Amino acid sequence: MAPGSCGTSASKSSSYNRSGSGNGLNGPTLSLDLRAVRIESIRSSDDDFGSPRLMIHANDGARGSVAIPESVKSISPDGRFKRNITYWQKGDLLGRGSFGIVYEGISDDGFFLAVKEVSLLDEGHRGRTSISHLEREIALLSELEHENIVSYYGMDKDESTLYIFLELISKGSLEKIYRKYPLQDSQVSAYTRQILRGLKYLHDNNVVHRDIKCANILVDANGSAKLADFGLAKTIKDVNSCQGTANWMAPEVVSCSKTPYGLPADIWSLGCTVLEMLTRQIPYSHLEWFQALLRIESGKLPKIPHSLSRDARDFVKQCLRVNPVDRPTAAQLLDHPFVKRPLSNSPTSPLTIDSPDL
Image 1 (spheres, one colour):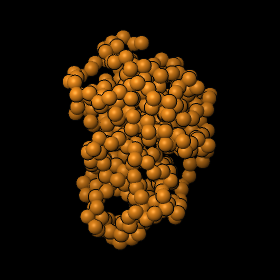
Image 2: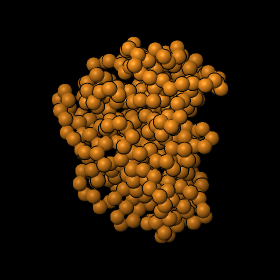
Image 3: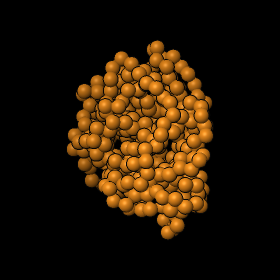
């Protein structure tokens, strides 16, 4: 269904942000042999400070063309037809996602939404990869429904383009928010609590997100945080390749050709994400991404400033336990003092990461 045309689509929800996450496909595609594992680098975000989204192909299987299941075109997660989008108009560009371009849209009844689109005409590897990841995002989002996960409204396609209709999130990504506002512990705690609720829901359903970072967490005007960008997400039984964004990847993901990985990988990425919010810098920010990967694989943690509160430091350290078996679950972390702390009105000053490592 092209913009301004009629068609059927609809139901429940999925999402993107008005400000855009800044995710982009404009970076180079690189190949690198890291410990005998082939890595493809796709620039995942203009705002990721040079850290690319990686696809480490250890046991990937065939990556051919895909077909979008008809069953996901109009059925909402709970089986109810929440919205039937029969006509829509394309508005401003919101951002360039890792596997698609996102625009603001307006439906025939005045409802604003985000529209992620990917070309069906690109027959190269990147085109097939984009369609494959968008198909995966559609399939998963059509099965998920939680207040801390972006909502999915439906999808459609015409001869040249595939469209996915998403909830429009007004305040953009946590990355954009922490760049604009130095966040207090109480604010980071509130966002972390909501991220954990979303992760607990995913993990209870045996889904691993595989790309948790501030750029992929959106916030609405009420301060509600929602997990977004499910292009790399998979059910545990389907995880057979190592994917993610370099500086947020867990050690077992980087070395996935040696050991399998699962839900704890998201907990490591969460620790990096909380550290990112508190310091306003990405983990391993002083390193090039390939240097960061080597450091991660060797079990060396990112810098955790001593200027952080005791609860914040302890939370991050628990998430960043090198052995995935030792990491707490999302449910356990919801009981951590850092997450349960009350809101505070006290002022705060920007933090630095000059402090020595642990």
